[in-house]
Amino acid sequence: MERRRFVFYLLLNIFVSACVTSAILFWYDRNQRAAAPLSAAPAPLPAGEVATPPAPAASLSVEIVSIVGAGTLNAEAVMIRYTGEGELNLAGWQLRDEDLNTYKFPALILYKGGAVQVHTSGGIDTVVDLYWGRREPVWESGEAASLIDPQGVVRAVYAVP
Image (cartoon, rainbow, N blue to C red; front, top):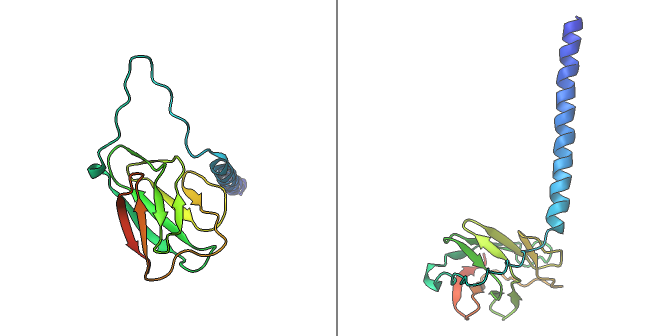
């Protein structure tokens, strides 16, 4: 009987410890992600070194994966994913609808397989969520969303469902 009681309390202790640890890690992740800057400034190159030029435009592989919540300000979000090699700096890129409402991206680096959501409403930017800060919805069913690079080249188009 004593041994059964010991095993019960041992299992209860393991369960409570796992729950508390999970709760603390969840809270820490949420608070740290909100406080993290979008990207750090690149370190200066040592004297005599030359920066590697960006990848040629043809090798960029970026797509608008989805637009959800069209017509509802607090639900609207555009998911953008980079599947190319190396990294993609979104600084100077634009997300635009057919009515020429334009979101300009801050300095944000996407790595292969990386994605970011652009929310129409206001909020605090993180490395995975950017906020446009609009007071009314932008996206309408049937219109096209365009992702445009700093040179004005349309890199991706998505029809809003």
